[in-house]
Image (tube, rainbow, N blue to C red; front, side, top):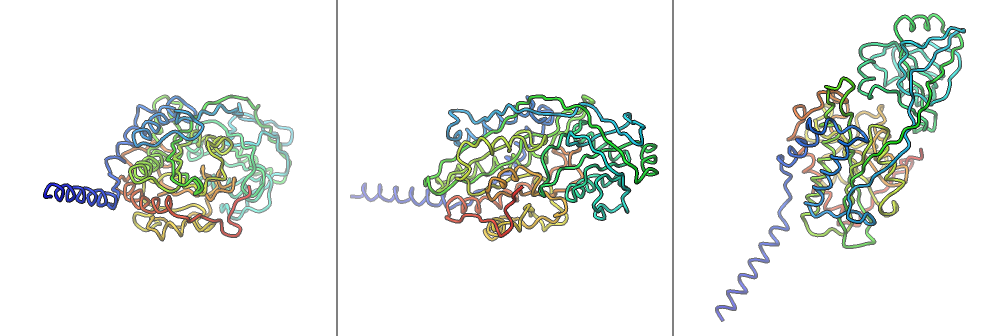
Length: 452
């Protein structure tokens, strides 16, 4: 009798012990966060250049982490976590030619973007240095080159065809950050308007153009060269207990700008976006360690984001499960620094006002708030947008979205706030567990779903 009672007591204690473990809050450890960053943003990976061997190595690292957590490959992918995309990649080869009153200029032109089409029209001079003052001009010579991307974004919204700015040290640095090659922009903006061509010219030519305001000019773009690139998405899958409950998608992009043309400077991308990959990995670790959730969960790290959201676009066209089964996507982008505009230990969510997703997760304890930079249109500039266009409620969360290290050589581990990263990832764990086990389905608010 005593032996039976002793056995029952031991069994009861074991049950209580397991229950206590199940109820113990998950703790994200800073050393895990640091370990991911120490590899992904190391010199060894040389900045994980888009569609490169280093991007693939990063993908293999993520896949190995998924396997160690017990995360499986996605349905239909066999034993592989890697989704390889061979994509056509048209690019502009050269700088173009500017024809003004029969005089052709070709030297010194720096073409940042182009539609690939020749542009002709009357040259207008911007009325002020404020990009917001841009009117209906189709070809505009702008002032204040330090705000070049503000001009470009305003021009995209207004429907301008060509934006010309004076070359400066700031524009040369920006061109280097873009990879030192013009980008072919064939798709329209979110407003359905063609994206403008962006061009900088030397000071002497800028002055000539300013004196010729009102005259007709023509920009002939360089030739289009068709390349092919191979980029890699890495996909992990946590099978839920209810096949009808839908699937969650947590994502980030793997790649960055790589080794620069000088052969020395490494754009490590510790914040952009090794930090986002780290968040995906730590959410995956936490959810895989607990009881099997009701909903299935996909964990995806996209390739070639820096080349124009190419990995996410390929995933959206070639998903391992039907997109209709994905009920929500949360993308992590640059969560490595505290934004001085936001409350402490808080991330911003792009397009917060477009759906009820953000406010619901915030009410559950996820430390997020609305995007304080609506003028930058961040909602449309990250991988989430490809999923949102497919109808999925999809948003990106970021830390300091306008950090001074953006696309610069000092985006390295030394400039990360690891305690901040750890805290904001930690704040998502319990809300993510709740989301994975609830019946709640995020919904677009009226007018919130993007159409283009």
